[in-house]
Length: 149
Image (cartoon, rainbow, N blue to C red; front, side, top):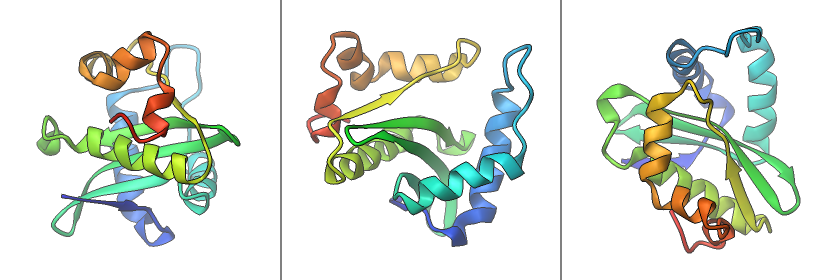
């Protein structure tokens, strides 16, 4: 598996992964679904910032992580999607590690993320991960310093 920063050439693969994510994790009741046109503007800005990563198995994209640069000291993970056939193989963990390393290289000291209550699969992943335990004990900044994920 190869983890690398996304480029604009990855648009088709990123769109496919985003559409899979939106189908699996719809917006909560009362929220309008996001459109690709709206999402892709934010995604392209985050690609330009070096905060979007693609996981490849061979030549096929099997996962993606999009973060945003919240401020000089913090990146925020917006979306993580791993295709079902690639789950439980460390793909999300590898994407998070790449994100934390890039955040640290940019000068950030923290990486944050949030999970919708309705996204039970992600709740399970984050609960089981060491990063989730660190976040609960208040020392999540270790992740951005390269000591986690």
